[in-house]
Structures are given as C-alpha cells and as structure tokens.
Length: 359
Image (cartoon, rainbow, N blue to C red):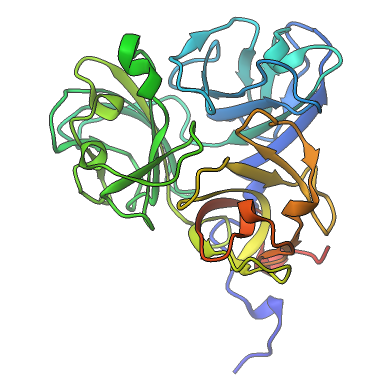
C-alpha cells in the first residue's frame, strides 16, 4: 500500500494542459496587425469574445480554425453562415495569433478574451467514412477539427481522426443560405443525451429528439454518423465538425443534476478547471461559460452567456468554488442549479489533480 498523497497518484497523460488549451486577454488598441496574443503554442482553433460590460452591440462569440483560414469566422451564438473579415484574425503564429483592427477583435478601448485549442495543424485527408473529410486532430488531447461536404444521405459517415469515439460533436454549416439558414444553428451530439437527440449551441432550447441529425447512430472510434437533415448533411454544402472526448486530467465531458440548494452539487472533473461550459437539457436557457481568468479566486461568480448579456458579468446567482478536482456549486439559482434539471458540460483543465494547488 502507498501513502495517501498526491506524489503517489499516477502521472497524468497531459501534465501541462496549457500546451493544448489556454486563454489570453487584451485591451483593444486598433493596431493591424496587433502584437502576438501569446498562448504558448500555435492554435488551430480560437474563440474570441469582446468581454466589455455592458456588452457592445454585435458582440458575438467568433470562432476561427486552421481548416477555414484566419480571415473566416463563424459566430457560435448565431446561426449565420461563415463570414470573411480581413481585420478580425490576421495570423496564426508559433506562440499564439495576431488580430486586426476590427471591433470584434481589437477595438480601442474594449476588453477581449480568447480561448485557444491545439489540434493537429494543417489538415490531412481522411477517407475512413462514406464522406471524405479533411481533419486536423490532436489524439492526445482528444480534439479534432473536421471539414466535409454533405451528400444528403441517411447513414453517411465521416472520419474524425481521433483514436477513440468522440463524446461531443458540434456541427456547423458554413454555406447554407436562404430559408434553411434560420435553422442552421450549431447542432451537437452529447454522449449523455444519446444518438436520438441533439442540442444547439446557438439556441436557448433544451434537448430535441430528431433522427435526422445522427441517424440514431453512436460515433465510433473512427467515424461519426449523419442523418439526412440539411443542417448537418445538405448535399453539396460544406460543414465543420468539432469533436471532443474526455481525457483524464485534461478534459471532462459529463452531466450533473441540480438540487436547487445553496449547498449545490459537487461536479468531479479530476482536475482544477480552467474553463467550463454548461447548459440545462431540460430548460430553455442560455449556455454559460465560466473560466479563469476572470475568476481567479473563490467564490467565483463572473460568467458569460450566449444570450444578449454576454459580457463578463459578476452574478451572485452563479456562485461556485473552483477546486483542485472539480466544481462545487454554491447557489440555488435556476440556470446552473435548478432542482431536478439535468445539465451537460465540457470542462478543460488548468492543472491535473496531481499538480493542482488550493485556491
């Protein structure tokens, strides 16, 4: 038997989570290009958000990735198609990225925050599924970026490039226009909801039963399956998919049930969270993101949502402790802790439990 101490815990698969996911903040200065926004690695996906409170008009969550190129972005909280802006993101650099002078990324005197993920660099061809794809995959961190062209058929499969089945698959059309655009949100598969349901990142609605999204098929270690719904598989249209699975000590995709009490549930992640995103599957409410920064001490209560009030905002209804191995909810407010509601979440590590410090 060994002593009960962190020295005797197994070494985590990813000892330094910040080599795969981290955040950076800055104050806009209208420079184009800006100085490098330092992450410590060359990112393959970046989310950028204006965090100024109150939230400026048009302050969306903007998503960039290596497969579409730096000038093109998607809005995570908006169903619109891919948009080009040469003054948004300017370049991916070896230690981070640069921005232009657009209000969405670098307008004086707004505050900004970016979340950066490491995938696999320039995409490679993947012919594993019935639909060929281009994939940038980080198998160690359980994250891949996938681009594919829909064929409109039920049961089509797409290779995701990971070494095990993804637990979260987020799909977004990039060139659907016209009547279908209003429904062309961000449908996502979550392992806890099963393969007959989806939930959208760009809507407040809960989970929805729909065989047209995943064809009632669970992702495998090599492919995910599509139905014939235009939002995920419109023939001749282009789509992005962002795939994740849990990695011990680095990423956790899971669920919890609210208890409606100030002594809320403890959510075990196995690491000190740097960022976690959650949503009730039973209630029409916003997606919520809490991260460090800006929550650098407990009790944490600064949150961002995908609703109209999406800036950094202190909110006593979202009180929580960020712990060395998870999250403890400290409020009975309905959005994070409604009694009996089931919540889905994805969390990324600041440090694995073996190396995390008390706050």
